[in-house]
Image (cartoon, helix red, strand yellow):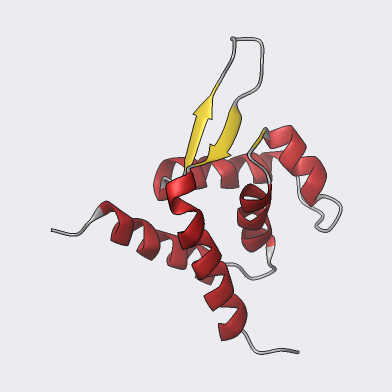
Length: 108
């Protein structure tokens, strides 16, 4: 039976392989740099480099949370936004996946 960690590695690699403009890698690296964030804060940080809508960022964060499984979320009350944070046990997987994708892509 395949371990959870190896399933996450495979899903993470597949997620990064489909990264055509670097947005997915940027979102993953933001989660490595900050302890916790909301979709609005993440969107504000990403729009400095990419022209992307808030709903696109929210969709990508939701995918990372639900399908890849490397984020945790909580809500302080029903009026506050959801706060996402990286599960620390998977930080090394993200670093390795991002490094291997950077070395796999040829420099232009």
